[in-house]
Figure (spheres, rainbow, N blue to C red):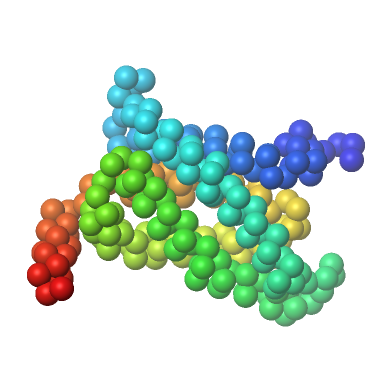
Length: 204
C-alpha cells in the first residue's frame, strides 16, 4: 500500500523477521540505556557481553513470544467491530490486558532473569534466589506500566499497528528489566536458599 512507512511495509510483508530484528536492536539499545543510567557513560565502561545477552533475549525469545501473543490474543479473545459501542470495546480490551499481565508478563520476567543467570554462569540456586528477590517486585512494576499502556494500545490502535506503541513502551521497560536482571542477589537471600537446599539434601 502506497504511503506506508518503510517499517510498516516490512512488518506487513515479513512480520516475523521484522519483529525479531527490531526487538534484537530494541533490547540492545535498552540495555545500553540501562547501563548509562547506572553510570556507564563512556564506551570503555560499557559491558558489551551484557548488551549481547539482552539482544539475544530480545531476538530469540521476546520477539517470537510477543509476535505470537498479539496474534493469539486477537484470535482467541476477539476484536470489537469498527464503530462498536464503548462498552463493547472495553469488553474486548479487558480480557486481553488481564491475560497479558497474568501470563505474558511474568513469563518474560522469569525468562529474562533466568537467561541472564545461565549466560553468566550462575548456579541454579543463585538463579532461584534471584527470582525470589526480584520476580514479584518487577511483576508489580510491570503491571503498573503495561496495564495502562496495553489498555490504551488495545483500545485505540488497530491490531496490525499495535507493535509500534508497544515498542515505544518496551524500550523503557526493557532498560529497567536489564538493570533488574543484572543486579546482584542480596547475600542474605542467597544464603537462605543455600541453607534450605542443604537441609533438604540432609533430609533425603
